[in-house]
Image (tube, rainbow, N blue to C red; front, side):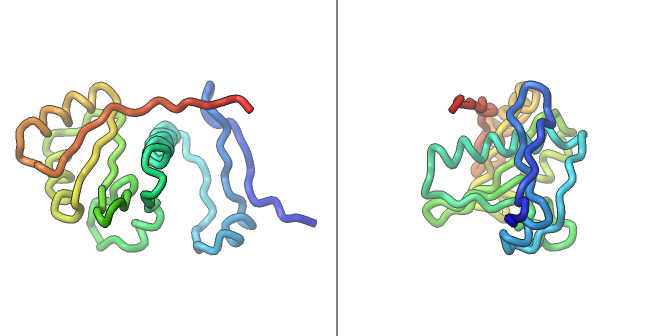
Length: 158
């Protein structure tokens, strides 16, 4: 009998179903990740990160997306964890997905840290956060910073 590797569930109204690895699926993947349980407060952010990942991979299939869970294993205590890292043409691009406006102080600290660790810092933002990050980008203080609007996920019927 074949072990069930994923559970497919609808978690957000009007959004595509999520495929969530089961314990068997995680073991089969061999990455040593623990079981993930959806937390309602994080679902919109996780969905947005996944949309950005799919958008980037569709436009740059040769690039490598490094998962946040992998980055968490490698980070130093106290380091800010980006939502993902894209490796393309030998460059490491820290990816941040921002749905809400954060304090200027917090965003500046994150930008200073990520700019010191990565070749580029690319923010994908909802409208309010986009205005905030665009203004910081225009200041010129962070020449490695790029700001984009969140892409829209297009789901094709099969």
